[in-house]
Length: 168
Image 1 (cartoon, helix red, strand yellow):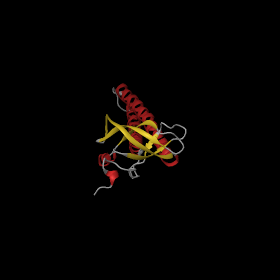
Image 2 (tube, rainbow, N blue to C red):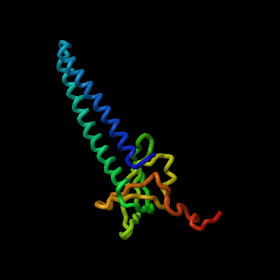
Image 3 (spheres, rainbow, N blue to C red):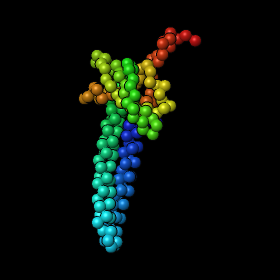
Image 4 (tube, rainbow, N blue to C red):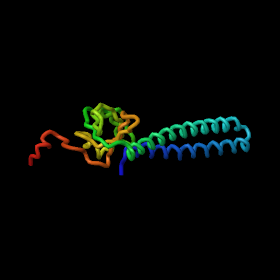
């Protein structure tokens, strides 16, 4: 099942694996530096670069995984509502060939006046047809601007002009 946090969680895990690989290479370079005469400095520099790269990847992975966890929290505990798509914009970002879009939504949740919010989502190509009409969303009660689209839920209400008339 695709959720808004799927891509962040997946890439966070991949970055952790790559960081572990980088750390292993750094350790190997450091160990070899003592065994290779004349190449000690080069291997130590390589070990330092690999170690630094691994640390940067761990930080990026931690950020991605923390964002995915926050998105999952909103998806499970957030206030259910709807988000009517008022505008779409491609961000120019592609993740594994899947576009990221920024949606301008008119969000409606019980007990609150409808308000505008923006949501950036990686949308699988197969779900691009869902980017019309009104989507099911969840909203963080503490931060109403934090809106998560519920891709596992069908669009709400009519998705195209004429659909509401029930014409056959």
